Image (cartoon, rainbow, N blue to C red):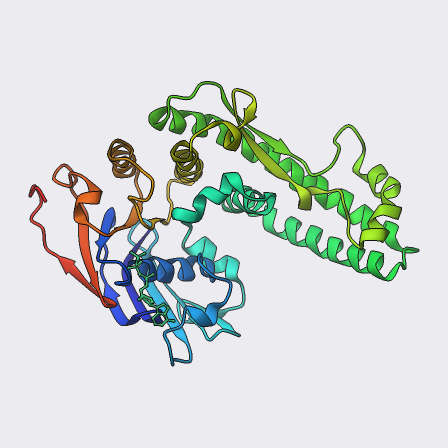
Length: 366
Ligand SMILES: Nc1ncnc2c1ncn2[C@@H]1O[C@H](COP(=O)(O)OP(=O)(O)OP(=O)(O)O)[C@@H](O)[C@H]1O
């Protein structure tokens, strides 16, 4: 799965640009504020229908413009391709798949699975649990089609229960308790199964980048698993009513990344933490390629940030070795290391929102 052609219209300082990327590695370089991240953001918008930098979409639309559009021809193996498009005006989102309008953001995500690594990605291991839940659930969503409808039903039941808690009208609350127990248990099981599959891939990926012993990953369910969830809803009712929300369930779930049985963020260096996050993200991609034989794009914004030359080389080697389209940005070509050993890549230069493909005869040392 890869972008064959990408058209960007009104994304930050990119007014109107089209590129034909390589199926393999795409290196994007340019000075600060040239528009490299805007290009990465455009691809992310297309696959996730949201920005990775802001929840305020108006700020992504070029100044004084009403809307943005990103569209692409996406090759889906065996020569078949689909046309994906998204238009956003800050209020509404219009998704087009092969010229048909779709209401579902999940259709885009299935059409173009994306993984992104950027300087703030380190939050995956040093910020609150929500970002880790989303990480796990995104992996499961791409593995198991049945997961999303169950998760949606769980969230709907949770919203209903919380609404009853807030108005203290708890007579009918057991109806929602039953739904939450039912769907919540399934969500937790999916997470556990996914984590069991991801763990060995993660350990193998980490071994390539980090000399850390005894790394493990374990699921935090979001409730005291020595007790029945059903019983916890009964026991916690008074507390839940006082705060107006449900304290136990997979919506409070998390995972812990442990190094020598301690939370990674408490024992490793900043650079190591960043590498651990990269490993987690690449392990998800690798698992998906193993199980589904394909992936969409890996996006890496600001490649050189906090990574030393050795690690940048190892990451590039890894990316070169997996069958996947990659977009990587840096301010200097030199940050990409030796490109002469890599075939099948394209180099793009960005300047004031204009993207141009730089011709480098393969085998040339940059
Ligand atoms: N809505 C917008 N409309 C037009 N330009 C914008 C908008 N939002 C931001 N910009 C400008 O777009 C330019 C490109 O920003 P971008 O973050 O893509 O740069 P970059 O090349 O990734 O830079 P750096 O290397 O510093 O991270 C900046 O000058 C920024 O001020």
